[in-house]
Length: 300
Ligand SMILES: C[S@@+](CC[C@H](N)C(=O)[O-])C[C@H]1O[C@@H](n2cnc3c(N)ncnc32)[C@H](O)[C@@H]1O
Image 1 (tube, protein in one colour):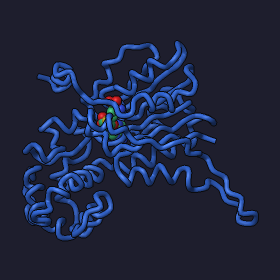
Image 2: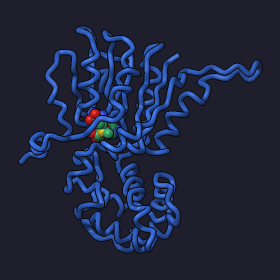
Image 3: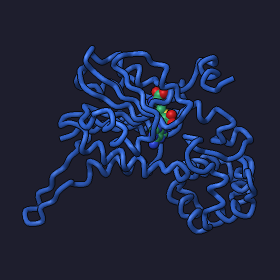
């Protein structure tokens, strides 16, 4: 059965994180133009549409061909299959260059992690794929064959905060074979960290996923577009799950856009309104929300 259909039959694709807070922070004008850059299963999109008036519009993007973008039938809703790295072109083609607010809920959907053949999880044995869009670029196992050991070590260190990254990179390369699997990767992690391997498995998968999908480069492009496209007083609402993502969001409001070296006067484009974490109760009912941080910024 088609996996999109199967997801619907199972009745679960993804549980939106901090949904009420996200929508409250994002929708400052019910008749405004909004973007949900990471549609996933559409939980946040549906809640945003509930808050919009009859003239409000919501553009929603997802790069994953399995994300059920066609599951919402609403004249105010505009689905776009694509990478938010290309948002300027994707929205420009629809005549949109200014928006009221944008939501980006980064990371993976539960559907992606829980589908064994997508090769995202060490819980299942499958070729290591890790692509959010399996029709774009190389699967991780093939991508690994093209990496130099020191380059792979650098990525593991920077995207996964991993100790002994060089040793791990070597273990991966020595055990590499065509169709290198999630279990092969776990074995390389075990070879490197011995009895501490369980501590690092998730970080290793995350680091390779970030690299294979060019996640931080895409986020940088998205944030740069927001700086020109979001109207004054409009909001940028971002759910991050990794320190590299959080660093890019913080840079937006911490770094001045202009600085006068004579007077010392600094001009900022974004102001931080609030940062939230899910409550203990939300983490209990949705453990995947535990590393989430919700950033709410306002355009000055
Ligand atoms: C955490 S899920 C979003 C869940 C969604 N907020 C919901 O309520 O169901 C992240 C989604 O963003 C998508 N995604 C990640 N990076 C993307 C990118 N650069 N461009 C477009 N979609 C992306 C993934 O495919 C995934 O479906």
